[in-house]
Image 1: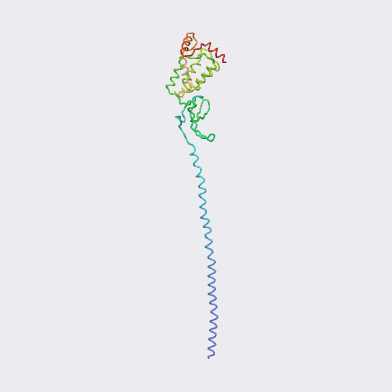
Image 2: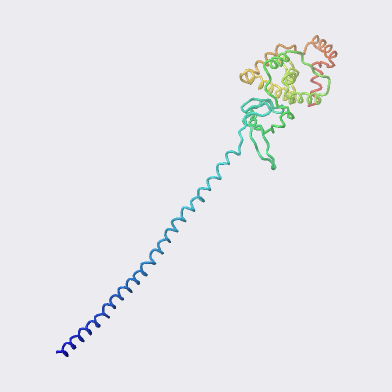
Length: 283
C-alpha cells in the first residue's frame, strides 16, 4: 500500500513538472510577441511628419510671385503733367516771331543728350508745322502773347497813314522789311503792309516786293483774326478797307508833300518812277 501511494505521488509530481515548462513557454512567447509588435508599430509615426514638412514648405514660395507686380506701378508717376510755364498755358495762342501765330498744344518733358528739358509744343496749323521750344528760351526767341485789342486798333490805324519809303537800294529796304516782319511787333508789321501796298491804279509790284507784302499781310491778318475771333478772310477785308483810306502816291502834289514830310523825318518819299527804277535794278 505504501508502495502504491509512493508511485502515485511520483506520477503526479512528474505531471506537474511537465506542465510547468508549457506554461512558461506560452508566457514567454506572448511576451516576445508583444515586444516584436511594439517594434513594428513604433516606426510608423516617424514616417508621418515627412508629408507635413512638404505641406508647410509650399506656402513659403507664394510671396515671390506676389512681389513681381509691385515693381510696375511707379512708371506712370515718372511723367509730370504741366499746364503752365513762363506765363504761357497749354491750348493758348501765342506769337512766335519767326513763324507768326501758333497754338501751344502741350508742355512736355523730354530727355535730350542725358539732360531733361521742358518744352512748349507749338502747332502752326496753316503751315502744317509743329515746333518744340525750350521753356527757358522763350524770352530769347521773343515768343509773346497775343496783342490786346488796343494794340490791334493802333496797328489798323497805322495802315491809314502815308507810305514812307527810303531812297535806298531795294536789297537794303528788303532786309529792313524782313526784319520788321520777323520782329513779331504787330505795329511794325502793319508798317510793312502799308509801305508795300499797291492799289489797282498804281504800278504792279515786283516779285520780291510782292512776296514780302504777302508775308506781312499773312502775319497781320492771322493775329487780328485770333484776337477778334473772326476768320482770316474777314481780317484781310478789314485791313484792305483801312489801306483804301490811306493817301496813295501817284500825283505830283502828293509827291511834293511827301518829300517835304520825308525830309523832316529823315526819310524821303520816292516817286513811282524812281521807286520802280530801283526795284528793276534789284530784279
